[in-house]
Structures are given as C-alpha cells and as structure tokens.
Image 1 (cartoon, rainbow, N blue to C red):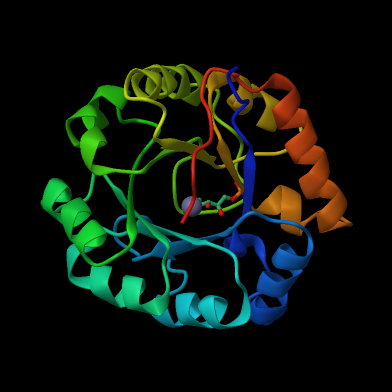
Image 2 (cartoon, rainbow, N blue to C red; image 1 turned 90 degrees about the horizontal axis):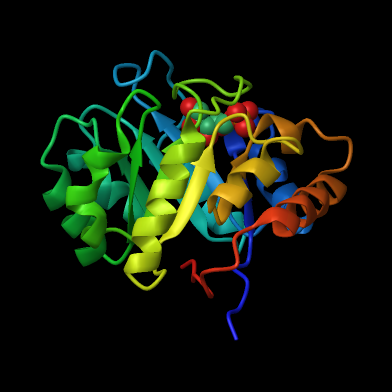
Length: 235
Ligand code: DX5
Ligand code: ZN
C-alpha cells in the first residue's frame, strides 16, 4: 500500500509584523504550522534586505518548529555555520549563488543541518540536477525572490513535476517545496504537481485566522496531491 505524502505548511516570517516577530513565530506554531520559513536577503543577490542569524536564534528560542532558512545571498558560504549554530534545521542556498555550491551543501550537512537547494524562476530545472544527490530539499521559486506578496508564476509547475519524477526515481527522499504566491488557489496546483512542502507568507499572516487558513490550505493541497511517494521527514 502506498502512503499518501503528508503536506507540510510553513508560514514565511517575512510577511509578519517586524515589530512583533516573536509573537508571529508563536502564532504560527499555535496555528498548527509544520515549520517556519525565514528569508535571509543580502541586498545584492536580491534588491532587498531582511533578517540575519539573530532572528533565526530568536525563532529557535521561542518555538519548537523546524526552521527552514532560505539564503538569498550572492556569497552564502562564509555564513553557513552562523545560521546553523543559530538553529537552522534546513539551510537552503541558491544554485545561482557565487560560490562552490556542491561544497557549500556538503558543509551544511557536515555541520549538522539539512541541506537544500533552490533556484530562481529564470533558471532551468536541469541546473540543479548535478547537486540533487547532496540535498534533502528542493525549493522551487514561484516568484522572483526578494519580496513577499507577489503573483504566483505557473511556469514553476512543470519544474515541480520534473523534480517529483527525479525524486521518485531516487526513492522519494526529497522534500519538494514551493515559495512565492502560495494561497488557497495555487496550493492545490503545486500539490498536484508533486510539491510536499508549501511556504506561504502573505496568505497566512494576512488571514483573519491563521489556524483556519493553515488547515484549509492543507486540506485543499491534500485533496489534489500525488500519491506516489511515502513519508518525507523534516528535521
Ligand atoms: C520571496 C521569499 C518568500 C516570501 C513569500 O523572496 O523567498 O519566502 O516570503 O511570500 P508570499 O507568500 O507573500 O509570496
Ligand atoms: Zn523564501
């Protein structure tokens, strides 16, 4: 019997009130989130600046949830250890980063965190295949990274399908996540394509009741998800 893949929902702290990040992290946990997504921007890889390792440390202190840390940085390599010691359970770097990506992914694992690779909407999915054996998670960007609240790009859907196929061929050990413009309309689309971890900022932090929004998003995604893969663990 093939077990259906559980759908995980990770609110993105970027959409929270920056004057109350601790409250926001606790709110996500209380609302039934499976983890928390933290966006780190360097003002170079993307035009925006956001948060650093101390915000990760704060989140680690106040919630039990797995922390999924997304580095939008041209040079992530000198900072890997700081984010891992701050509490990043998963550390994601971009394939477009200006560093030795394979070595950086190996360093993340050696330092005790779960390595993930992510890629921009303009990057072909084939770019990540050479490092697929080094990662636990593939994050498909469905907007241009840098800002929350942007419109979902459907061009990500065939990419998710291709990664799901590659993951199936490898025994379904990959978490396939999507980031950008995920809401009640797009969540079922990405789940149908094979995504197992949905990252959502605006639609969850902007919801009247985050708890209701998370359970609704989960239900909608589970109704359309692919049933080909079994359990995918998140550290
Ligand atoms: C965008 C970030 C996303 C962002 C998503 O650069 O990587 O994580 O928070 O926000 P929404 O869900 O509002 O598109
Ligand atoms: Zn992100």
